[in-house]
Amino acid sequence: MRRFLRENGLSVAFILLFLVSLAGQVVTGFHEYNKERKDEHHLAPVALQTYLGSGHFIQATFENWESEFLQMALFIVLTISLRQKGSSESKKFEPEEVDRAPSARRKNVPWPVKKGGLVLQLYKHSLSIVLFLLFLVSFCLHFYGSLKDENEKLLLGGLPPQGPGSYLTSPRFWFESFQNWQSEFLSVFAIVVLSIFLRQKGSPQSKPVDAPNAETGE
Image (cartoon, rainbow, N blue to C red; front, side, top):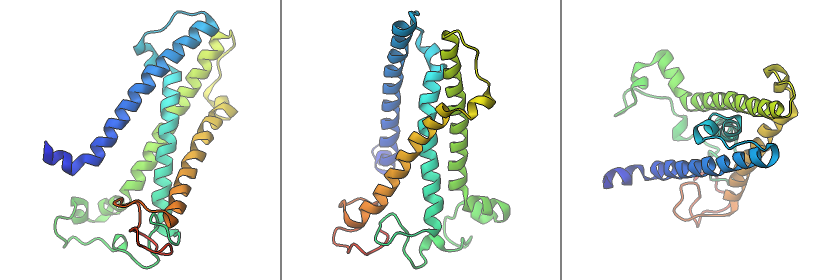
């Protein structure tokens, strides 16, 4: 167990933080949802399992996942060809190890490298492909949850529900998306620029403390 934690401590820490945060979201969202039902519509509270299938929960969860996966996918793709002088988050201006052509002759290479052909071509871009797919799945689930939540509110108000086509062009759905996208892009801009001038000893996201500001890359 000790060896496992030593070798996987970063992923373990983040999955635990994720689960704790998700649990906090469920509990607080559940109480907020029932409070709205009681205070605004004088309705009885729903059970937890009912809340987990509500548009309120689905929309709130996946609009955040959507922006995170979009940010990470774009950051990975854009850092292939774009540079930022002095940033530890940028590739250097000369070729790096990550740019080398894959070789099946190297020791312990992943099986797609040995396989070659189309499998290798997909594997060469698999990280960005999967992140964009996760973004699309999250985007669709966000849309589904947001539409469901909107129609639940319309139903309580005695109004007819909206169809998917009309809701796709509604300001509410895109407001939910853009408010999350802009914050993700700002956070990436911040780490790219701040890492030029600031340091964090021991972090792979920072340059060495004694590195000059103009030094690009880790």
